[in-house]
Image (cartoon, rainbow, N blue to C red):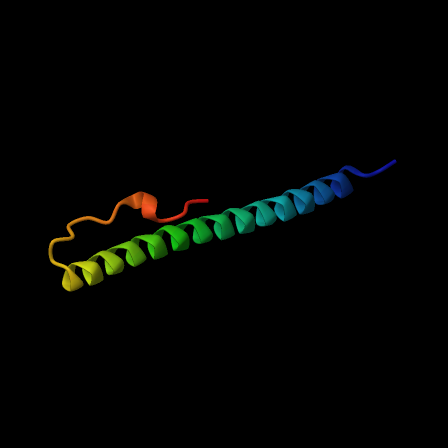
Length: 69
């Protein structure tokens, strides 16, 4: 028969491992999403100011000019 302490130890170890892997995965996904939106926003505003300096009559770069996933 398996001792209760062994079961508890296995359970804690499994839970910790699952938690770490879930946290890691969430962190990576959040970082990727934050990075992507930051880059897109920076790119869009840079492009917009560049275009405005070339041609002051351009007031807006539509969002749909960027491909979305």
